[in-house]
Image 1 (cartoon, one colour):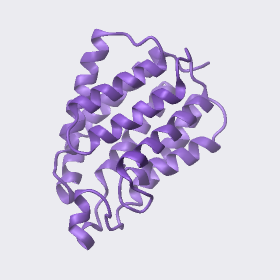
Image 2 (cartoon, rainbow, N blue to C red):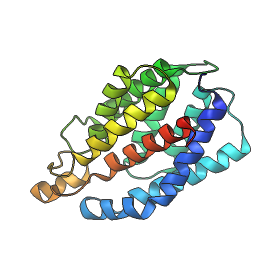
Image 3 (spheres, rainbow, N blue to C red):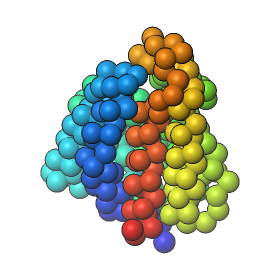
Length: 208
């Protein structure tokens, strides 16, 4: 069975709950190497998204993803708003007006999201950013076969490993790069939030 607009909305509500739950953790991670605002910025964005979802019912998965994009771009400060907004916007364009998404479509959407983030932020693997979580997630999704839940589970597992890989890295992008060698030894907050969102999406798809 494919992923409908209602399924996407349920996954987004689950993601909002995860962002709320991990808000303080993301603030602490960002406090170490950034502006200490990542957790609060994301919480504000996803809270606004919940209000939008209460007020309107997206007609397709693509429209639901576009709603996320426009909401995050307009409400999330710092680098996260434009980056996540671009990711969801590119994902929305990739799935088009399809009424349901299968695993292959979800993998394509993740690929498009990554391309959007790279185009916007100019980061590559090893720069200690969300790209370090999203890139292995896309690779895993592309090689996973079967259901939406299976594709997202593979992506989430790979993203978690990718996020952990940022700990020893020296940041080469964003505010963390100002710290030079002192940025090593800390988990990148953007990579962590990427992994959290993908896990929320995977759990929602699996009915957890």
